[in-house]
Amino acid sequence: MNTRKRTAENPNQWAKELHRLLLALKDLLPHKASTSSDPTTHKTITEAKAINEEIFVLLQEIQHKINEPQLSAHESELLREINKGFTLDFWNRYHELQKKRRDETLTDEEQAELLQCSDRIENANVERVRHIVKLAELQNVPLPTLVEQL
Image (tube, rainbow, N blue to C red):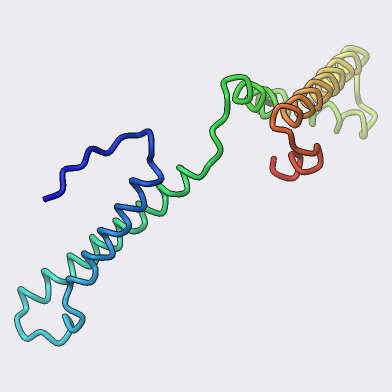
């Protein structure tokens, strides 16, 4: 049995080796399992094939994760800021105030509150754009490309 040490330093190579081993396992399974007359053998082979398929799905997920770009702490923080949003209560109140404005039933206090909400949204969008620009610079990608990826 091969007991080579696998480290996280080269996870892509580890995934390739695992893939090779799984292909070998698949080749070991009889190709005509469905014609076997022994129900126990047939059940075992069917279960082995199901497990093998689950392993392949898991391997694909691992390979996808390995191929994802690793972000620095600063880039991760920028993404958190870009994706930061307002609470559901905030949006419900904002839409309620907008409806009252359209219905022309907005009080002076509600008008002031609606303006504050609009200012908060506008300021958040300005900050979001600043963070997107900074992230594009850090990743050395054109701004439209990054916006499309987000």
